[in-house]
Length: 448
Image (cartoon, rainbow, N blue to C red; front, top):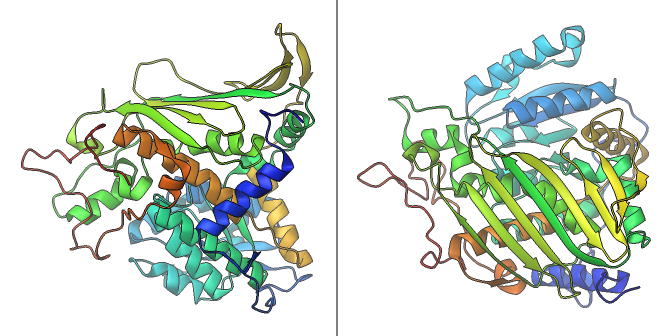
């Protein structure tokens, strides 16, 4: 295999170094001294009781996907810091699935609000938890699921800082010991077409990988405004996307899908370094919190290739989502409308994936539930944690304006958490006298 394309041994070495830095390897082997526990849902049984943690649009969509592929699954509990969000989500699901009222069996006493609602949900007897809350809470909710012996499907990303990623990795190893599912919301990895495409790249059909290029350009997203009676914590939680401590910034929250596909193609090799540009050029009002509206990052891999990552959330601009992998014999493309193809050096089409009949998230839940029932649960914790960390590394590079090494990023102790979780507590970032939130300044902001 070529020097610039990661070998299986380099991928294994990258994984080993990643886990070792997390403190998950002891005595030369992944810690696994605890006895493997019985999965919380016995293989061969039919009914799966699902709990939803995080009741926004993404959570509602995930529930619909889960129920649509498994007639033995039903939603029995919901948790969200805000009760009105749960009630709205429940009503939305009932309207979207009028023939499945018996499988949307969430009584009022199984709506768990507040910052501790997830713990009450996990104690209510659910078999599976879908985690779709703001990304900041993912590590603590993952840990709680694993501790409770509950199978989990976690939406992307898995954390917003390096300490959070390390917590996710540790929880993933514990889930293996307990024999519980740890499934990723990076649904691309469950797409039959993308699986075939990546296999073809790994088989050398585009030659040695030279570069990877990804673009995720969109317009403005939602904003929920501010009510006079909201505390600052409530306001930021309602508008979580626009605060780095809650979302990780949009390179982590949104662009991470493209990073995950690139990491998959690179066999989980960790980038050696990253540098980039970013800022707030259009979305400058205080309502947009402290995140950037554009990022551009160059990742350098030790094995040779570079990844060029571009993402922008600016209105009235050219939009599109594309992935391109350039090789010495051709390229793999995933186009704006989802088409996947391998092209030759002169652009001639050599292979085109068949159009997929359904959204890959459906395949994800189908495989997850099959794994639970067979007693062979899926564990995606390493790949999902790794892709999240690559995205966080890119944000560090754009927020700080410096080149960042993998070791510096992954071993960072910078924790974005607030001092306490309460509606009257201060979030990690507060507005200044002019109402603006202090934003990262490249060349000034310290990110390590």
